[in-house]
Amino acid sequence: MSQTVETTAEAADSLAVTMEGVDKYYGDFHALKSIDLTVRRGEKIVLCGPSGSGKSTLIRCINQLEAVQKGKIVVDGIELTAGPKNVELVRRDVGMVFQQFNLFPHMTVLENCTLAPIKVRGVSKAEAQETARKYLARVRIPEQADKYPAQLSGGQQQRVAIARALCMNPKIMLFDEPTSALDPEMVKEVLDTMIDLAEEGMTMLVVTHEMGFARRVADRVIFMDKGEIVEIADPATFFDHPREQRTRDFLGQISH
Image 1 (spheres, rainbow, N blue to C red):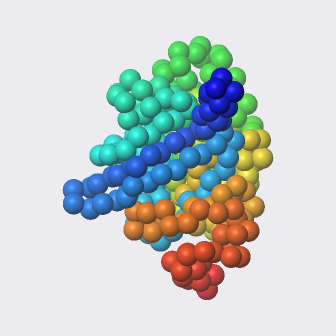
Image 2: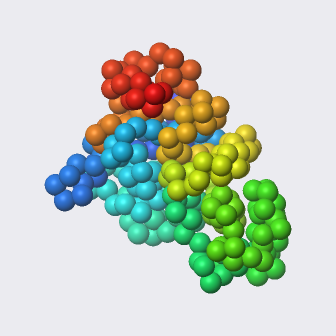
């Protein structure tokens, strides 16, 4: 009996995210339909699918940027759907990078990166700056610390946004189409930064149309359509032997 309890506890502790029967509506529009998903610690998940399929909505529900109407979401052992205090706790440990960079234009890169650690975590300015410089070096733009966002390229701004999220020492990183607003020549530098993160073991959920990234980095690829998870598979199976016709149709469209 005790062995079973211990095994169950260990299994629960290995999970970064659990979603059970999650439904999300915008008025009468059913955006997410009975979503069930588990993400293990250190796992890299890529979500893909046609526009409007619910991919971005799903990851935005993981830090309650979108409230759900039904179901249960547990993030790092904390039930997100149990109340506002839990939402605050979860948001401290979940970093998010958006399509648009959302940097404060009147602040330098360094100030953008130190604001949340100082205000939310209460760390000293000196410690926050040391951490920020470490992560700016990690995303390969340490020399940009004293510049303002408008002085940077789009790719550099997105790497600042990644560094800013890392400065909170998150346990999970969410990426919502992080390269979709970039010029093609800037996409690779952002994807390379994300590949580095993945190789270091960060738990990541990534909404992207970059299928080369999914093949290289993902542990599992999730295909969504019309608010449903249609298929989940490892990259080799997903791309070479998709099970569902909707998946095959989608892959056929993006390969042309």
